[in-house]
Length: 328
Image 1 (cartoon, rainbow, N blue to C red):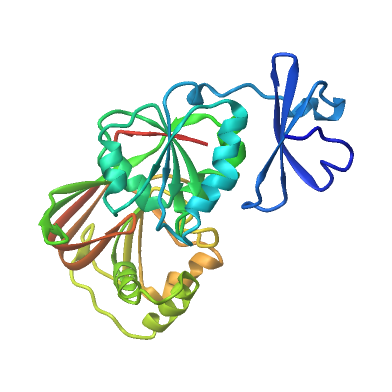
Image 2 (cartoon, one colour):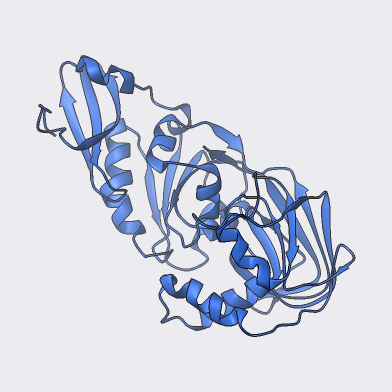
């Protein structure tokens, strides 16, 4: 730990400062989300940094777990934990337990016994695993280490500042109930969602992408463009209307950092032809507020927060009471 002078903090972003007895701790970072956290100890806080003083948030004063999803997104969760999250928590004096995933079921297993606050280094799928497996309500701090990161892009602007200065709020949830559905050949009657439930083009795209494991995530858009050139027909009705190319129920306004689907984070229905999908990158998609969505006579793939299911028959989607708090 160093004592900062005029050069030590040059070109550094000040993240925060707090008082430790007779000393002060200053956190800084070179511009860039993955640059290491710098910790400085000083006996006197410079006057121009007094506006950065903060107190330890109440949600990190109890049990704190950090879940590192090692295979999420660009595979940088381990690096991000060692460079950013661990030094940050250590500097704050926050004791925590690090939990590394070893299988795709790890987060579900952790959720059966964790409590307090969970710092999740994962994507939307990790949040879905949590809400469907928790035994008690927890407070979630999310860092965007997935692929689309819809929750982060819709609710949060800065992960570090959210950890330091955020406010826990109930995260809206919806429940999807099935007449007949299977995940990995296992029957399922219902599942909770936090981002999006889709039928039609999007699950087909995701299924094709997952089959091509050698593809980089940057090629996802390219694959979508190729599939859009192929006419597709999907059976079923959406709230009584014949199924078009894309149907989705969403709880968020953005499905990634560029794709806007709604004006707010509320329960909305999107139902349109695939030819209109690219509007999400320009003007946003038309999304209607609804109380409930019913899909009748569907058959094929369905996607819930990145999880693919095989469905048939009737599907009902409704907003339900929140089961988790998100720090925003």
